[in-house]
Every structure is written in structure tokens, then in C-alpha cells.
Image 1 (cartoon, rainbow over the protein chains, first blue to last red):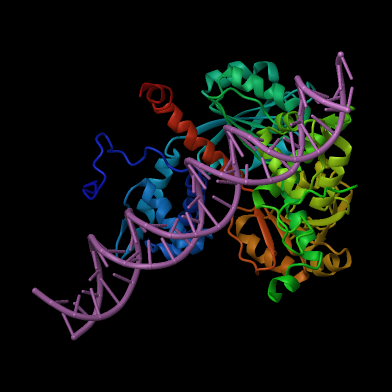
Image 2 (tube, rainbow over the protein chains, first blue to last red):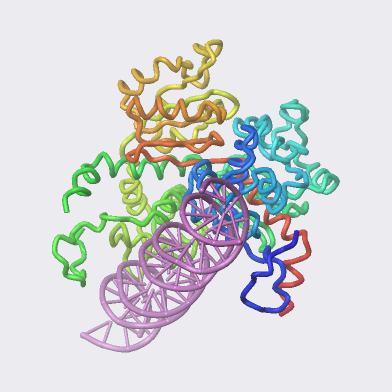
Length: 235
Length: 235
DNA sequence: ACGATTTTGTTCTCGCGTTCACAAACTTCT
DNA sequence: AGAAGTTTGTGAACGCGAGAACAAAATCGT
């Protein structure tokens, strides 16, 4: 409250700072949130941008600039109130509400995701699990029964599911994706090693385990190849 | 072969193109590689940058620029030889050799990773699994027995493991990381929701499932909040 | 053999994100 | 109260990556 009067650029209807937060910043907010939670659990009441930056593994100037997009929640000469800032970031991300997610494809990875406690603790409730294999339908994973893909649309609509997680093999991914979109899901987290095509209003994020390893391998190869240590110091 | 004579910038000792590939490009090479493999499996012999870009889900200009960092492997007026380009990218990433990886923390996620066939098929061989829990040591997962953490250093050195995967809870991650680094691992793929501190010569990549969901939630919230469709078209 | 066509490789421009550096604002000490 | 010390918020400079656009090089048809 008592929001700042210090805005310089006097454009009209420029009241809300939360107009456009850069994508790179959005990706870091969850990291800050986690750092704040850790600090809060250690009964730290206030933290400077330096402290926070260290805890989050980033540079302090970047952290301050990121936070400045949300508003002015710090106090000069003091730092940030840990719990207050935590709440503000959570609100900005949208974690003051609960989100329902469904997981499609209950193989090895789907199993792990269904049992992952980190989702529930951050406000993501797994509403249903799906698999194509009729053998698997009815099987209990975690505290949910696996449903048939045919029931996807009904369940998604009834539970107002906005986020779908795809953990199928690559070949099935696009089909499942289409079904999810058809059912009204507008955000998709894709673990399948496949490129998904979606309508413009749908967001897709991709997590690809073997790509990460390949990127590491590239750098590893370079290190081993005799560059680096030698050539770097030379000139 | 018959490599191009067309280099314009006549700087001396500028022979090798593979001096510095931008990080953003490196991250996309595995995607191209996968697209090429798919095409090759469909018996496609040649593909244009447009074809490849579509298959990889990127813009064709970006793809061409990315490939140009590796060398001139295309033929103007024709396109790229699928298998030849595939080999060149694989070589560049370092997939012409096999990489040994170890997985530490055989919980839900560790299990899934140990069984993930996508690793082996891309030249990543899981050399060993580790867990702190003495109950678990000796248990068979996939075709490997879980080893005790105490044996980590010996096994890592013997198998010349360069890449370690951390799938422990957050609290154990830094300790495990230190052990891996101590044992000589110089690339780490971290699934634990924690910030790792490592010496400069060690690469860390982080995969965080709940952060991905939180990023989706942010955008989802914005969509639902009445912006987007309405305000976007207005002015 | 030569023009028309295709498609690559590269140059150029633009925008985003990172980092530096500093004034403004707050606290604390005397 | 005033000076000294902290720490935030942000303006400005810089570097990297994305995309448009085009010239160079290869094929194809006649």
C-alpha cells in the first residue's frame, strides 16, 4: 500500500506495474520464491538483495532489477521482509490459488511425477492420471486411479484443469496434446522428446532429459579436448 | 570434402570453425539431431533448411545460422544430406563416443531415470546407481544394482565417469554434489530443487519440474485475468 | 551452354537481457 | 539533529541472439 509516487514517466493509465514482466524474470521468480521459503524456514525475517542473490544463485543487481518489475517491496538501507516478499512473488506467479493438473502417460516418468511431493506443496494438485494402455486403467498410483484417455475431456472440464503434463513416448505426444487442447487445457508441460504443434493461445514448455545430457556432453568434450586450461591462459 | 575456399575474412589461424559455438546454438543442436534421426528413419535422404526447421520447431534462418557455426555442410540449391549432417552434429556434440553417467538418489525420479531408454539410445550409458539408504543398497533397478554412496569415488574413477545425475531431495544435493566433484565428475545434471555451488571447471545444468509448472501458472493466470484477448486487439 | 530456379551462408539491424554504477532513501550512532 | 553508513531502485552501456534480407552457388530445363 501507499504506493510510490516516484514514477517519472507520466504516461496515463500507467498505474499497474504488473503490465509486462520480462520472460527471463518470470523464469527466475520461482527460484527466488524457493530461496525465500528456505530463509523463512530458518526464521530469517529480513534479507538484503545480496543475501537473496546468494541463496538463489544469481547476481544481486539482476535480482534487484527482477524484483523492481513487481513493485517496490524493499526498504532502502534495510533489505526485504522475507515473508512479505514471498507472498508478493507467490501472488504474482499465481500461487495464491490452487492449480489442477493432469498427467498423461503413466510410464516410469509419469509414475515419478504422480508421486512427486513437490507439486502438491507448491499448490499444484494432480487431478487425474491417464494412460492409453487398457491394462493400466484402474491401477492405483499415489492416491489416484489411472483413468482411460477417453474420459480425458470430461474430467478436464469438470475439474477445470488448465495445465496438462505429457509423459508419453514421443509418438503419442502430439495426439495426446491435441486431446488436451480440445478439452480446454491451455498450458502444457511436455516431457516427451517431440516437437508439439499447438494453437496460439496454448503455452508449451518442454523438458527434455537427454537434451540436457547432450549439452553437458558437448562442454565435456571441449574440456577434454585440450582447449580450456591451456589456451585460455596463454594469450 | 573439397572444403570451401570461400572464406572471406582473411584472419590468420582462423582455420577451425569450431572455435566458439554460441550457447543458444549448442542447446538446439540436440533438437536438430533428433529431427534428423526421425527423417533418416523415414528414409529421407535430403532435407532443406525449411524442412528441418519445421521438424525441429524453429525458424529456418535460425537453423541455417546455427548450422553455419559447425561448417558448410549443406549444398546450395539442394539442401542437407540427412545422414551426413546427422553425423556431423553428433560428432560436434561428442556423441560419437559413449559417455558414462552415474545416478545418485534412487527415489521415484531416480528409478525413472535409471529405466529411461532414451539415455542408452543416445550414447549415455548408466554406469552405476547410488543411494544413501542402506536398505536400498543391493536392490536391482533396470539391470544395475544400487551401490552405497561410500563406493562412489572408486566406481566413478574406475569407469571414467564424467557426468553425474543428482536426483536426491534438496537437502542432500549439495553434499552429493561435493562427493561427485571430489571423485572427478565435471558435469552435473541436477534434478534436486536446490542451488548447487561448484568449482569453476564443473558444469551444472538444472532441471526443475515445479519451476516449469510455476512458469506456466504465471502465464495461465494472466490469460484468465481478462488481459490478452481483450486488450491485445484494442489499441 | 546458359538462363531460370532453388536454397544455402552471411550480413545487417533490432530488441532483449545483463551488468555497472550511482542517486535516493532509510537506519544508526554520536 | 546531523553525519556516516547501508541498501534499494533504476538509468545507461553493452553484448548476445533472433530474424529479415540478400548475394553466392548449386541444379535443372531447354
